[in-house]
Length: 360
Ligand SMILES: Cc1cc2nc3c(=O)[nH]c(=O)nc-3n(C[C@H](O)[C@H](O)[C@H](O)COP(=O)(O)OP(=O)(O)OC[C@H]3O[C@@H](n4cnc5c(N)ncnc54)[C@H](O)[C@@H]3O)c2cc1C
Image 1 (cartoon, rainbow, N blue to C red):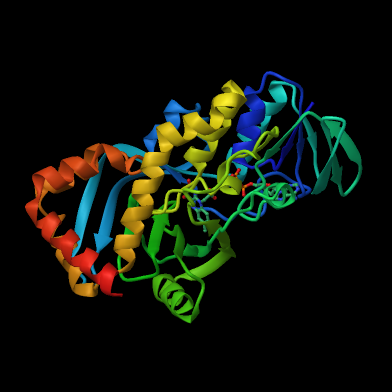
Image 2: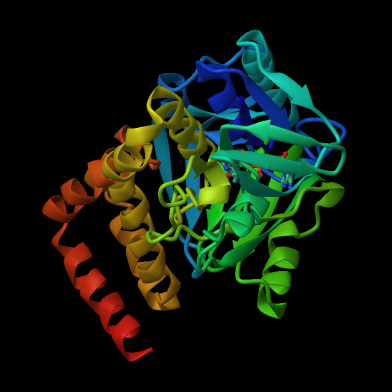
Protein backbone atom coordinates (compact mmCIF):
# COMPACT_ATOMS: atom_id res chain seq x y z
CA UNK A 1 0.00 0.00 0.00
CA UNK A 2 1.11 3.56 -0.80
CA UNK A 3 -0.05 6.43 1.42
CA UNK A 4 -0.62 9.78 -0.28
CA UNK A 5 -0.97 12.65 2.16
CA UNK A 6 -3.16 15.43 0.74
CA UNK A 7 -5.97 15.33 -1.82
CA UNK A 8 -4.89 18.48 -3.67
CA UNK A 9 -4.17 18.31 -7.42
CA UNK A 10 -0.64 16.91 -6.99
CA UNK A 11 -1.62 14.05 -4.63
CA UNK A 12 -4.76 13.04 -6.52
CA UNK A 13 -3.03 13.19 -9.89
CA UNK A 14 -0.24 10.96 -8.62
CA UNK A 15 -2.90 8.54 -7.28
CA UNK A 16 -4.67 8.54 -10.66
CA UNK A 17 -1.48 7.26 -12.32
CA UNK A 18 -0.03 4.95 -9.64
CA UNK A 19 0.12 1.28 -10.47
CA UNK A 20 -0.09 0.07 -6.85
CA UNK A 21 -2.85 0.24 -4.22
CA UNK A 22 -3.11 3.83 -3.01
CA UNK A 23 -4.79 5.39 0.03
CA UNK A 24 -5.24 9.18 0.06
CA UNK A 25 -5.46 10.92 3.44
CA UNK A 26 -7.04 14.38 3.46
CA UNK A 27 -7.36 16.45 6.62
CA UNK A 28 -10.44 18.34 5.43
CA UNK A 29 -13.99 16.98 5.37
CA UNK A 30 -14.37 18.05 1.75
CA UNK A 31 -11.88 18.05 -1.13
CA UNK A 32 -11.13 21.38 -2.83
CA UNK A 33 -12.32 23.62 0.01
CA UNK A 34 -11.43 26.16 1.26
CA UNK A 35 -10.27 27.67 -2.07
CA UNK A 36 -7.00 29.65 -1.97
CA UNK A 37 -6.18 29.97 -5.64
CA UNK A 38 -6.94 32.03 -8.75
CA UNK A 39 -7.19 28.89 -10.84
CA UNK A 40 -5.62 30.39 -13.96
CA UNK A 41 -3.82 27.87 -16.16
CA UNK A 42 -1.96 28.16 -19.43
CA UNK A 43 -2.79 25.97 -22.38
CA UNK A 44 0.11 23.66 -21.37
CA UNK A 45 -2.24 21.97 -18.92
CA UNK A 46 -3.72 20.11 -21.92
CA UNK A 47 -0.42 18.30 -22.37
CA UNK A 48 -0.70 17.03 -18.81
CA UNK A 49 -4.40 16.25 -18.39
CA UNK A 50 -7.75 16.66 -20.11
CA UNK A 51 -9.95 19.42 -18.67
CA UNK A 52 -13.71 18.99 -18.55
CA UNK A 53 -15.57 21.98 -20.06
CA UNK A 54 -17.70 22.47 -16.95
CA UNK A 55 -14.55 23.29 -14.91
CA UNK A 56 -13.84 26.39 -17.01
CA UNK A 57 -15.34 29.60 -15.61
CA UNK A 58 -13.82 31.96 -18.18
CA UNK A 59 -11.10 32.29 -20.81
CA UNK A 60 -8.34 34.87 -20.88
CA UNK A 61 -7.10 36.04 -24.26
CA UNK A 62 -5.19 39.16 -23.28
CA UNK A 63 -2.88 40.41 -20.51
CA UNK A 64 -2.75 44.11 -19.70
CA UNK A 65 0.51 44.91 -17.89
CA UNK A 66 0.54 48.32 -16.22
CA UNK A 67 3.74 50.22 -15.34
CA UNK A 68 4.02 52.41 -12.21
CA UNK A 69 3.65 55.54 -14.42
CA UNK A 70 0.30 54.22 -15.72
CA UNK A 71 1.55 53.23 -19.20
CA UNK A 72 0.34 49.80 -20.23
CA UNK A 73 1.17 47.13 -22.74
CA UNK A 74 -1.27 44.51 -24.01
CA UNK A 75 -0.18 40.95 -24.75
CA UNK A 76 -2.61 39.03 -26.96
CA UNK A 77 -2.25 35.35 -26.15
CA UNK A 78 -1.94 33.00 -29.13
CA UNK A 79 -3.43 30.28 -26.91
CA UNK A 80 -6.04 31.34 -24.39
CA UNK A 81 -5.57 30.74 -20.65
CA UNK A 82 -8.40 29.22 -18.68
CA UNK A 83 -9.78 30.24 -15.32
CA UNK A 84 -10.99 27.17 -13.48
CA UNK A 85 -13.42 26.47 -10.70
CA UNK A 86 -10.63 25.29 -8.41
CA UNK A 87 -12.86 23.25 -6.05
CA UNK A 88 -14.42 21.41 -8.99
CA UNK A 89 -10.97 20.91 -10.55
CA UNK A 90 -9.62 19.23 -7.39
CA UNK A 91 -12.66 16.91 -7.35
CA UNK A 92 -12.25 16.20 -11.08
CA UNK A 93 -8.66 15.06 -10.52
CA UNK A 94 -9.71 13.14 -7.41
CA UNK A 95 -12.32 11.26 -9.44
CA UNK A 96 -9.53 10.10 -11.77
CA UNK A 97 -7.72 8.71 -8.71
CA UNK A 98 -10.85 6.95 -7.47
CA UNK A 99 -11.42 5.51 -10.97
CA UNK A 100 -7.88 4.15 -10.72
CA UNK A 101 -8.83 2.36 -7.48
CA UNK A 102 -7.56 4.85 -4.87
CA UNK A 103 -9.26 4.80 -1.45
CA UNK A 104 -10.03 8.22 0.03
CA UNK A 105 -9.88 8.94 3.78
CA UNK A 106 -11.50 12.30 4.47
CA UNK A 107 -11.20 14.29 7.69
CA UNK A 108 -8.09 12.26 8.54
CA UNK A 109 -4.88 14.14 9.29
CA UNK A 110 -1.38 12.70 8.90
CA UNK A 111 0.47 13.11 12.20
CA UNK A 112 3.73 11.23 11.70
CA UNK A 113 5.34 7.88 10.98
CA UNK A 114 7.67 5.25 12.41
CA UNK A 115 9.84 2.78 10.55
CA UNK A 116 9.30 -0.82 11.68
CA UNK A 117 10.87 -3.88 9.98
CA UNK A 118 11.60 -2.04 6.74
CA UNK A 119 8.03 -0.71 6.46
CA UNK A 120 6.44 2.53 7.60
CA UNK A 121 3.66 2.81 10.14
CA UNK A 122 1.83 6.08 9.60
CA UNK A 123 -0.23 7.63 12.37
CA UNK A 124 -3.27 9.71 11.46
CA UNK A 125 -5.87 11.51 13.57
CA UNK A 126 -8.02 8.34 13.35
CA UNK A 127 -5.81 5.27 13.02
CA UNK A 128 -2.45 3.68 12.23
CA UNK A 129 -1.61 2.05 8.89
CA UNK A 130 1.27 -0.06 7.62
CA UNK A 131 2.52 1.29 4.31
CA UNK A 132 5.42 0.72 1.89
CA UNK A 133 5.72 4.26 0.60
CA UNK A 134 4.68 7.77 1.68
CA UNK A 135 3.95 10.58 -0.78
CA UNK A 136 3.86 14.02 0.80
CA UNK A 137 1.46 16.07 -1.33
CA UNK A 138 0.33 18.03 1.68
CA UNK A 139 0.98 21.58 0.57
CA UNK A 140 3.41 24.34 1.60
CA UNK A 141 3.64 23.42 5.30
CA UNK A 142 4.14 19.72 4.55
CA UNK A 143 3.86 17.59 7.70
CA UNK A 144 5.47 14.72 5.74
CA UNK A 145 8.54 16.85 4.98
CA UNK A 146 8.77 17.77 8.68
CA UNK A 147 8.34 14.18 9.91
CA UNK A 148 10.95 12.93 7.44
CA UNK A 149 13.42 15.69 8.31
CA UNK A 150 13.48 17.06 4.74
CA UNK A 151 11.54 20.27 5.37
CA UNK A 152 14.65 22.26 4.44
CA UNK A 153 15.05 25.98 4.54
CA UNK A 154 11.74 27.09 3.06
CA UNK A 155 10.44 30.58 2.62
CA UNK A 156 6.79 31.53 2.20
CA UNK A 157 4.90 34.28 0.51
CA UNK A 158 1.44 35.49 1.36
CA UNK A 159 -1.17 35.59 -1.39
CA UNK A 160 -3.98 37.96 -0.44
CA UNK A 161 -6.87 37.23 -2.76
CA UNK A 162 -10.62 37.79 -2.91
CA UNK A 163 -13.48 37.22 -5.36
CA UNK A 164 -14.79 40.72 -5.97
CA UNK A 165 -17.72 42.43 -7.63
CA UNK A 166 -17.19 45.36 -10.01
CA UNK A 167 -19.46 47.78 -11.86
CA UNK A 168 -17.93 46.78 -15.19
CA UNK A 169 -14.90 44.68 -16.12
CA UNK A 170 -13.18 44.00 -19.41
CA UNK A 171 -13.98 40.32 -20.02
CA UNK A 172 -11.11 38.07 -21.07
CA UNK A 173 -8.41 40.56 -19.99
CA UNK A 174 -6.17 39.88 -16.99
CA UNK A 175 -4.63 43.00 -15.49
CA UNK A 176 -1.19 42.92 -13.86
CA UNK A 177 0.11 45.99 -11.98
CA UNK A 178 3.88 46.04 -11.68
CA UNK A 179 4.14 48.29 -8.62
CA UNK A 180 1.93 46.23 -6.30
CA UNK A 181 3.39 43.38 -4.25
CA UNK A 182 5.82 41.01 -5.95
CA UNK A 183 2.94 40.18 -8.26
CA UNK A 184 -0.64 41.40 -8.53
CA UNK A 185 -3.63 40.41 -10.62
CA UNK A 186 -7.25 41.08 -11.57
CA UNK A 187 -8.55 37.96 -13.31
CA UNK A 188 -12.14 38.29 -14.55
CA UNK A 189 -14.67 35.50 -14.23
CA UNK A 190 -17.09 37.60 -16.34
CA UNK A 191 -17.79 41.32 -16.80
CA UNK A 192 -18.78 41.82 -13.14
CA UNK A 193 -16.75 39.42 -11.00
CA UNK A 194 -12.97 38.97 -10.74
CA UNK A 195 -10.36 37.17 -8.65
CA UNK A 196 -8.16 39.94 -7.33
CA UNK A 197 -4.94 39.65 -5.40
CA UNK A 198 -1.37 40.54 -4.50
CA UNK A 199 1.48 38.33 -3.47
CA UNK A 200 4.69 38.95 -1.57
CA UNK A 201 6.39 38.87 1.79
CA UNK A 202 3.64 39.44 4.32
CA UNK A 203 4.07 42.96 5.73
CA UNK A 204 2.19 46.26 6.07
CA UNK A 205 3.17 47.35 2.54
CA UNK A 206 1.62 44.19 1.07
CA UNK A 207 -1.65 44.89 2.94
CA UNK A 208 -1.62 48.45 1.55
CA UNK A 209 -1.00 47.11 -1.96
CA UNK A 210 -3.90 44.69 -1.45
CA UNK A 211 -6.19 47.61 -0.60
CA UNK A 212 -4.96 49.40 -3.73
CA UNK A 213 -5.65 46.49 -6.08
CA UNK A 214 -9.07 45.90 -4.51
CA UNK A 215 -9.92 49.56 -5.18
CA UNK A 216 -13.65 50.22 -5.01
CA UNK A 217 -14.64 46.61 -5.71
CA UNK A 218 -16.88 44.75 -3.26
CA UNK A 219 -15.38 41.62 -1.63
CA UNK A 220 -17.59 38.54 -2.03
CA UNK A 221 -15.26 35.86 -0.67
CA UNK A 222 -11.76 35.76 0.85
CA UNK A 223 -9.48 33.26 -0.91
CA UNK A 224 -6.07 34.08 0.59
CA UNK A 225 -3.33 31.54 1.21
CA UNK A 226 0.39 30.95 1.44
CA UNK A 227 2.78 29.90 -1.31
CA UNK A 228 6.25 28.39 -0.92
CA UNK A 229 9.18 29.98 -2.70
CA UNK A 230 10.92 27.46 -4.95
CA UNK A 231 14.02 26.11 -3.22
CA UNK A 232 16.45 24.50 -5.71
CA UNK A 233 18.07 22.64 -2.79
CA UNK A 234 14.79 21.11 -1.57
CA UNK A 235 15.10 17.32 -1.18
CA UNK A 236 12.34 15.60 -3.15
CA UNK A 237 13.03 12.20 -1.58
CA UNK A 238 14.31 11.19 1.83
CA UNK A 239 17.69 9.56 1.25
CA UNK A 240 17.51 5.75 0.94
CA UNK A 241 13.81 5.78 1.89
CA UNK A 242 10.52 5.54 -0.01
CA UNK A 243 9.32 8.93 1.19
CA UNK A 244 8.72 11.51 -1.53
CA UNK A 245 7.47 15.09 -1.85
CA UNK A 246 5.46 16.54 -4.76
CA UNK A 247 3.73 19.84 -5.53
CA UNK A 248 3.78 22.71 -3.03
CA UNK A 249 5.12 20.28 -0.40
CA UNK A 250 8.26 20.12 -2.57
CA UNK A 251 8.23 23.91 -3.30
CA UNK A 252 7.54 23.15 -6.99
CA UNK A 253 6.08 26.59 -7.74
CA UNK A 254 7.39 29.00 -10.37
CA UNK A 255 8.49 32.23 -8.75
CA UNK A 256 7.57 34.62 -11.57
CA UNK A 257 3.77 34.38 -11.31
CA UNK A 258 3.60 31.83 -8.47
CA UNK A 259 1.59 29.18 -10.31
CA UNK A 260 2.10 25.65 -9.00
CA UNK A 261 -0.68 23.46 -10.35
CA UNK A 262 0.97 22.33 -13.59
CA UNK A 263 4.30 21.58 -11.89
CA UNK A 264 2.57 19.56 -9.15
CA UNK A 265 0.72 17.45 -11.73
CA UNK A 266 3.90 16.82 -13.72
CA UNK A 267 5.74 15.82 -10.53
CA UNK A 268 2.93 13.36 -9.75
CA UNK A 269 3.24 11.88 -13.23
CA UNK A 270 7.02 11.39 -12.98
CA UNK A 271 6.76 9.81 -9.55
CA UNK A 272 4.04 7.38 -10.68
CA UNK A 273 6.02 6.45 -13.80
CA UNK A 274 9.15 5.47 -11.90
CA UNK A 275 9.90 6.40 -8.31
CA UNK A 276 13.62 5.65 -8.74
CA UNK A 277 14.07 8.24 -11.48
CA UNK A 278 11.53 10.80 -10.16
CA UNK A 279 14.08 13.18 -8.63
CA UNK A 280 16.44 13.03 -11.61
CA UNK A 281 13.61 13.41 -14.13
CA UNK A 282 11.95 16.31 -12.35
CA UNK A 283 15.17 18.24 -11.86
CA UNK A 284 16.36 17.55 -15.41
CA UNK A 285 13.12 18.49 -17.16
CA UNK A 286 11.70 21.23 -14.93
CA UNK A 287 14.48 22.31 -12.58
CA UNK A 288 15.90 24.71 -15.17
CA UNK A 289 12.58 26.53 -15.70
CA UNK A 290 11.97 26.78 -11.96
CA UNK A 291 15.51 28.08 -11.44
CA UNK A 292 15.16 30.67 -14.25
CA UNK A 293 11.83 31.79 -12.76
CA UNK A 294 13.52 32.20 -9.39
CA UNK A 295 16.35 34.28 -10.86
CA UNK A 296 13.84 36.40 -12.85
CA UNK A 297 11.90 36.98 -9.63
CA UNK A 298 15.07 38.03 -7.76
CA UNK A 299 15.76 40.57 -10.52
CA UNK A 300 12.15 41.82 -10.62
CA UNK A 301 12.17 42.33 -6.86
CA UNK A 302 15.01 44.86 -7.02
CA UNK A 303 13.70 46.82 -10.02
CA UNK A 304 13.14 50.54 -9.46
CA UNK A 305 9.93 52.21 -10.65
CA UNK A 306 11.88 53.80 -13.54
CA UNK A 307 13.16 50.36 -14.59
CA UNK A 308 9.62 48.96 -14.51
CA UNK A 309 8.48 51.86 -16.70
CA UNK A 310 11.39 51.20 -19.07
CA UNK A 311 10.51 47.50 -19.24
CA UNK A 312 6.92 48.25 -20.22
CA UNK A 313 8.25 50.60 -22.91
CA UNK A 314 10.39 47.73 -24.27
CA UNK A 315 7.36 45.44 -24.23
CA UNK A 316 5.24 47.96 -26.11
CA UNK A 317 7.27 47.03 -29.20
CA UNK A 318 5.34 44.60 -31.39
CA UNK A 319 8.28 42.21 -32.03
CA UNK A 320 8.77 41.76 -28.28
CA UNK A 321 5.07 41.38 -27.52
CA UNK A 322 4.94 38.73 -30.24
CA UNK A 323 7.49 36.57 -28.40
CA UNK A 324 5.42 36.77 -25.20
CA UNK A 325 2.18 36.07 -27.11
CA UNK A 326 3.53 32.89 -28.66
CA UNK A 327 5.23 31.37 -25.63
CA UNK A 328 4.02 29.80 -22.46
CA UNK A 329 5.03 31.69 -19.29
CA UNK A 330 5.24 28.36 -17.41
CA UNK A 331 8.44 27.51 -19.27
CA UNK A 332 10.57 30.70 -19.49
CA UNK A 333 13.66 28.89 -20.79
CA UNK A 334 11.83 28.66 -24.16
CA UNK A 335 11.49 32.42 -24.68
CA UNK A 336 13.98 34.26 -22.47
CA UNK A 337 16.91 33.55 -24.76
CA UNK A 338 14.91 34.63 -27.84
CA UNK A 339 13.98 37.90 -26.19
CA UNK A 340 17.55 38.60 -25.14
CA UNK A 341 18.76 37.92 -28.68
CA UNK A 342 16.15 40.22 -30.20
CA UNK A 343 16.21 43.20 -27.85
CA UNK A 344 19.52 44.84 -26.91
CA UNK A 345 17.78 47.25 -24.51
CA UNK A 346 16.95 44.26 -22.32
CA UNK A 347 20.66 43.65 -21.73
CA UNK A 348 21.14 47.25 -20.62
CA UNK A 349 18.07 47.05 -18.39
CA UNK A 350 19.20 43.66 -17.02
CA UNK A 351 22.65 45.04 -16.25
CA UNK A 352 21.11 48.00 -14.38
CA UNK A 353 18.90 45.67 -12.35
CA UNK A 354 21.87 43.42 -11.61
CA UNK A 355 23.72 46.46 -10.23
CA UNK A 356 20.74 47.19 -7.92
CA UNK A 357 20.92 43.59 -6.73
CA UNK A 358 24.64 43.71 -5.99
CA UNK A 359 24.45 47.03 -4.13
CA UNK A 360 21.15 46.45 -2.32
C1 LIG B 1 -3.86 33.24 -3.60
C2 LIG B 1 -3.27 32.11 -4.44
C3 LIG B 1 -3.49 32.10 -5.83
C4 LIG B 1 -2.95 31.07 -6.61
N1 LIG B 1 -3.22 31.06 -7.95
C5 LIG B 1 -2.72 30.07 -8.73
C6 LIG B 1 -3.04 30.02 -10.12
O1 LIG B 1 -3.79 30.85 -10.64
N2 LIG B 1 -2.51 29.01 -10.86
C7 LIG B 1 -1.68 28.06 -10.31
O2 LIG B 1 -1.20 27.17 -11.04
N3 LIG B 1 -1.39 28.08 -8.99
C8 LIG B 1 -1.90 29.05 -8.19
N4 LIG B 1 -1.62 29.05 -6.85
C9 LIG B 1 -0.78 27.99 -6.30
C10 LIG B 1 -1.58 26.70 -6.21
O3 LIG B 1 -2.74 26.94 -5.43
C11 LIG B 1 -0.73 25.58 -5.58
O4 LIG B 1 0.51 25.53 -6.27
C12 LIG B 1 -1.44 24.23 -5.68
O5 LIG B 1 -2.61 24.24 -4.92
C13 LIG B 1 -0.52 23.12 -5.16
O6 LIG B 1 -1.19 21.89 -5.20
P1 LIG B 1 -0.77 20.72 -4.19
O7 LIG B 1 -1.66 19.57 -4.50
O8 LIG B 1 0.68 20.55 -4.20
O9 LIG B 1 -1.11 21.30 -2.74
P2 LIG B 1 -2.53 21.82 -2.08
O10 LIG B 1 -3.42 22.24 -3.17
O11 LIG B 1 -2.10 22.76 -1.05
O12 LIG B 1 -3.09 20.48 -1.46
C14 LIG B 1 -2.56 19.94 -0.28
C15 LIG B 1 -3.66 19.13 0.40
O13 LIG B 1 -3.09 18.48 1.53
C16 LIG B 1 -3.98 18.57 2.62
N5 LIG B 1 -3.18 18.43 3.86
C17 LIG B 1 -2.27 19.31 4.37
N6 LIG B 1 -1.71 18.80 5.49
C18 LIG B 1 -2.27 17.59 5.70
C19 LIG B 1 -2.10 16.56 6.70
N7 LIG B 1 -1.21 16.69 7.71
N8 LIG B 1 -2.85 15.44 6.59
C20 LIG B 1 -3.74 15.27 5.57
N9 LIG B 1 -3.95 16.20 4.61
C21 LIG B 1 -3.21 17.34 4.65
C22 LIG B 1 -4.62 19.94 2.44
O14 LIG B 1 -5.85 20.03 3.13
C23 LIG B 1 -4.80 20.00 0.92
O15 LIG B 1 -6.02 19.47 0.51
C24 LIG B 1 -2.16 30.06 -6.01
C25 LIG B 1 -1.96 30.06 -4.62
C26 LIG B 1 -2.51 31.07 -3.85
C27 LIG B 1 -2.29 31.06 -2.35
